[in-house]
Length: 628
Image (cartoon, rainbow, N blue to C red; front, side):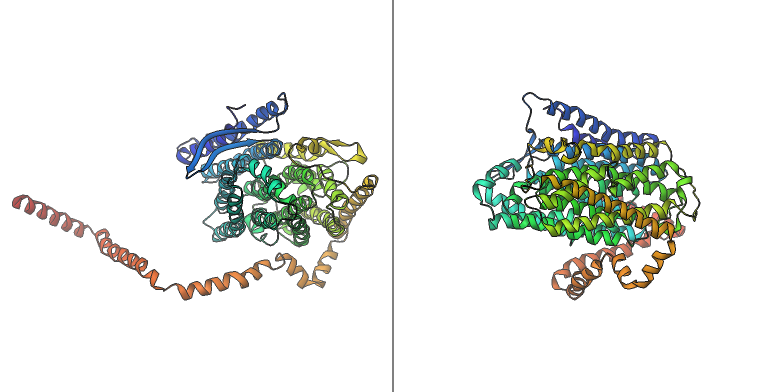
């Protein structure tokens, strides 16, 4: 095992290098073989190494592999080293396996795109950097992966860069996430100054010895790390970039939302849980941010017309559930929901991409309809993903992962009644907007004809993810239904087991019953509004036009930031653009333009001027030859 761990992130990078330098020269059919094949091999390597790690005798708690000594200066030493434990193993499994299915899907979905090799190169880079992020032994290497996925998100969101809107969405994602990253970098500097190391295990070991619970320094660092997590995971107040990220191709949306970038914030909080446990204020703030975000995004999803934007707001909301779980100390529950969410959200985005491609790139759900008969496999797999997102009871994986969060938001020692209430309301809203999406897209009259039917690669990806979205939840069954806790037991060497308030263990079934009633009630409400009485939802919308517009615009956060940040910055920049410091640079530009205009005369396109130039040049050469 010690010789192979580096191959897990290494293989996608090898694939990216091949595609970057030789992709345009490769036969087109070999491009997805390199792109998807490298990630597929990484997934197989994950299985092999994971099995060896878990069956080691004695059972391994963690494993470190130093690839090389990266930085050595004035006593500061950082190795390019990987850390493998059960937490990173869960993330590696999701990144490689879901990432491979997205690559497989892309082989067909992007087959006619002229940037085929470039697309797979970017996907491979994305997967490689995300693997570095979750496998890093130290915070500096982790930050390399952190910024790497930020770069790749910029490249992929703006992949179709000839459309100005796509470039704007890419820049918006890059800049807004940098706001959170700035806070995180400051936190890393303080950590290094405090502990003299950036090794994650070393910091986790020293922190309880240096700080007491409630330490102001621990709280400050935890809040700064939370700033980075909020930006990367699109949580309040830095959530505005994610809906616009739908500008990228559908496989990009699936990769960003399900397996890579937006889950990085969940990972960093879970990985540094010792610091957050020492900072109760920061930990409670994580829960509050999650609760507010899941509600704000859920209400926005209720009003969207674009199929992919519904799913984008859904992702923001579901990541909010993970943050809420982290905030109440339900560490393993957050990771369990991360894994299940990766399955069903990748399925939904890939299904949405298949639908949009089938109806000639139409995104508006109100212009779809009746597609269940035209696209039966897409419909059934999409329905499975939707049922899991809505947490329909007993038969979906989403029910078991979300049920844990609902239960522990109330029953945990760090639980809170208001957080529990927010989670319940969010569960109901989720079901309504999910089945609104299903009914508008697949039921009713056909409004747009199908022009493209998915092929084998797309269908395989959808079916595999549909199976995982169904059976994945059975690895963690609550006490009241059989008490199978594979995820909790699996993660217990790394993450603390959630403490339950004494005397309420037997009431878990009440929470489960309430969650089941809310899910079924939301489904029935969506059916009544969009199937039984479809005119009713238009009447409701017309009766509250300002509220509808408010939610449709994402609670006007973009307008708020435009007034508070963008316009003042542009105003000051315009005042400052002619300051003395710009003089030398403007002079260089003017000189370059001057010589350009002179040299442009030599490319006039008039043959006699070219002949005169040749004659003059020959005369000068002969003259120099005579004189010299």
